[in-house]
Structure formats: C-alpha cells, structure tokens
Image (cartoon, rainbow, N blue to C red):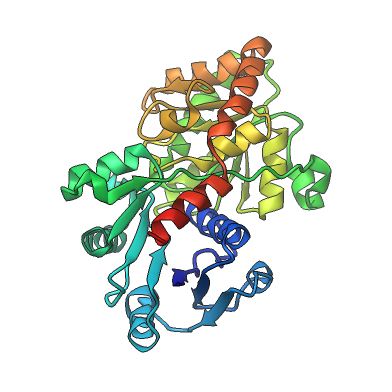
Length: 361
C-alpha cells in the first residue's frame, strides 16, 4: 500500500503544536511500519531529519506559490494517485483519493472568532467543513475536539476517532542552552509556552502574575514567555513591554532550547481560553515540572488529576493557582508525581500505532 502524507507542516522550521505533531507522527510511523510505502509531499527544501528516513519513505518536493495543499497536491493526486492520503492538519486537497484521512486539532475560531483575522476565520471554516465532509475518517486529538466536531458539523460519531498526542522526553539540562538564552533567563521563573495570540490569554496571565508579585513581594520568580507571535499579537507584545520588570520574552526558540527552558521552570501555566490538546502539559510532566491550567476544553482531559485548575477569566483565581504551587512544596511535589504517572497514557508510539491502524484499514 502507498500512503501519501502532507509533510510541509512537519518541515516548518518554526514549529508549534501542530508541526510537532506532524513531525513526531512521521518519525514514529517510520519506526513501526516497514510494510507500506510512503510519499511525503513537501513545498520547501526538506530538513535534515526527513532525509534520514527509511527506504520506504520517499520525499517529493513540489514548490507552489499559494493554496499548496488544495491545488498542488490535487494535481499530484491526479497525476500520481496513492492508495491513502493523510493530511495532519485540516486542509484536504480538492482532488483526493476515496480513502483520505484528516486530523482536526481544534475549532478555536468557532469559540473565539475575535482571536483570528477575517481571512483566517473564513479559510478555516471553509477548509475544515470541506475536509470533515469529504474525508473517509477524521482523527481528533482529544475527546473535546471530537465533541466540537460532532456538534458543529453534525457528524456521525463513528466517523471521528480520538488519537491523543504524545510528548517529547528529551533529557536536557540548562547547560545545553545557547549562551544568549542562558543570560536572559532569571534564576527562578514561571513559564508560559505557547504561540502569542488572544485565545492563549497571556495578557490575563501577566495581570495575574503582577497581582501575585504585589501580594508576595518576596517571591523571586519572574514570568518567562516562550512563543512566536501568531495572529493579532500587537496588543500582547505591548503588554509584555509594559511589564518588563517581571516578564522576560524569549520569542520562538529551537526545540532543544524549549525543552531545556521547561526543565528549569518551577511552574508551567497554560491559561488558554481554548485548547485542542495542550501538548506542553505532557512535556512539563516529562520534565518533572508542576502544571497549572485552565479548567476548560481539552486541558482537564490531558492533565487529569496532575494539575491545579483555574478559571482563565478570573485573574484572582489564576493568581491563587500559581501561588498555591510556588509556595507549597508538598503540593508541587505531589503534582510532579501525579504528572509522571499520567504520562503512561500518552506516547508518540501509541499515537503512531493508532493512526496507522486507520490508515491501513
């Protein structure tokens, strides 16, 4: 069987959650599947890891200026069809095999349309609607996302399968960091690790952290922010600029640096108004870092009993959640232990095995 995979997201040098998912899934499919042939479709020059895949993985670079998935991969399906086409992020080509599978990560624009530009809202609505109607199977990264898909698109639940993300468990120390990043990091810090866009609620987190620092004046921590600007980010950058005395912004960092920064944090906070999954929760568990997260959408599904929860719209509640972990060592240690136990339910190997099952049915 020949399986085609849209791999340009995995090839993106500036990776967020979706890109990490695509990369790790390809890497783990390569480890577990020697029986099938794969064609990985790329728009740009492949990163080094792609060129080191096994012999049953073929790379096909197809430059194209716009709507690459919808138009260029459609042309490829006409000229060189495959048995199965897998799209790891929503946008199904206009021309596609009968057996096409797509992964839907979230429907954030449905809940927080103001967090997206008008073009992105319209494109996501059209591309997701087209994909979920035409694909033979849909993979949702959480039960929360599956429920959203069934609700908004009136889908048969049997068409949507939940396959959770895994996590990267790199054993890195702060000594691995680039010197410029090492010099920027405070000795003790709380970490925000996500793309800068309104639904991630960084502005609310900064307000809560300011309240915490005012209330606990001896608290040595600063708030470290790691993540590239996404959509509608100018107000967020302005907020960071006005709070430079307590906030350190590192922008996007390389994968190894990201995991090393996480390993030294005293707390990871994910204050989003909505998440399709929340991969950084698992990465924090693997790095032995306690977690405080919003008690909405997929986050309780991922974190289970291994996190302190808060209402992301309540600044005082966010502040109190951070304070409880930073000032109570027994609570922090308990969360770390629960996080380690929680990891047994998630892995990229498991994600790849479950995905392969649907690709080869």
